[in-house]
Length: 335
Length: 127
Image 1 (cartoon, chains in turn purple, blue):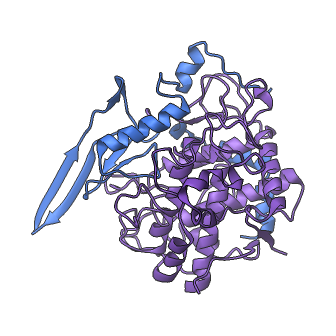
Image 2 (image 1 turned 90 degrees about the horizontal axis):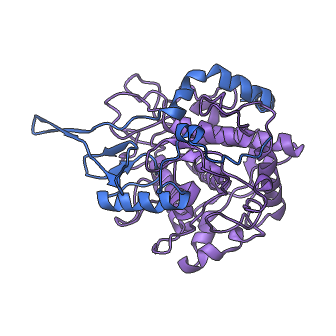
């Protein structure tokens, strides 16, 4: 029977299992991977199973597709192009499976955060909603000190810690100068922009009938993928929309290419995946671009998607219907 | 994809094997896509326009050296903060400063090499 993915805002059990599983993966060094084996350091610092997903995301983001002068919009192996949704679906499937492994629970379904429900609340209240409490996933902080991913400077070895992150000045992968916890802004103080709203999600499901359109990148003028990824702005002054808005709103470690450092990354992407699923239920399990040679390599229907955490391979086509593996408890649908 | 394939794929032995198999891609960890000129091209009334732009950006004298691109509308994308685009280069650098201050990278570089040889306390207590 397919596992069921539920909303962390309404299903306490899913939230607790997710937090426990993430902390177990963060302490799982049984793969024997070290910073030395990754070529990052001469020191043999162990790299957890959780942190290998961070590495995978960073590498994919720096893999240009194609890697030549025609790629003027920096389309990469996981973002800024059509493969954005199937690539992250594959990532979530592998993480979910590893969470089942460490939880020893083959019924566990990765939970999603219905951020649009929080986005419907007054903007000023959003950073104080229950998800960001110590009973949720902790709140803002440099570092976050409360909740299941909090950092205790008196006890750094037992704390949730960031092993490496993208230095936003140099663009290079960096190791913190000392033990450091997770950083979150939660709606920068000067920002008047809140989380995406239900109206925006329902509008996307209703109005976008194509999965994606040429040139299959961030400049695509319409298409569900580019709207959901967040490149098509609803208002000209907006910093970003939908998926992108959530990254920007949380800020801190959710801002650079090492954003899976924050477990909120998976709650965000699971909701993005749920919206994609809702769109396919409404409009059909269709994907573009097809395999024509002129379409961008790495983003076509049958192009291979590789993982840095497994030798399993997939394709966008194979990711279109995985309902035999998981389903969602509820999908957003316009009336 | 079958569930059994997924189960077999989600082991730590599989993780180690995957990294070993894809060693060639790991160079991106140390040498991400280098900064280069931003190239904009368009054909207008049969004429080919090409604009090649390079920028020199510093914060407190430190080069901002991640990859940067500008599209034909003038929108700027800085790859190290990948979820945003900016209409103003100054606004982009302000955002880089905001994020970098939070992540603790404004007061000096912390690349793996500097770290290894600089005598800092790693404090990684996994072992």
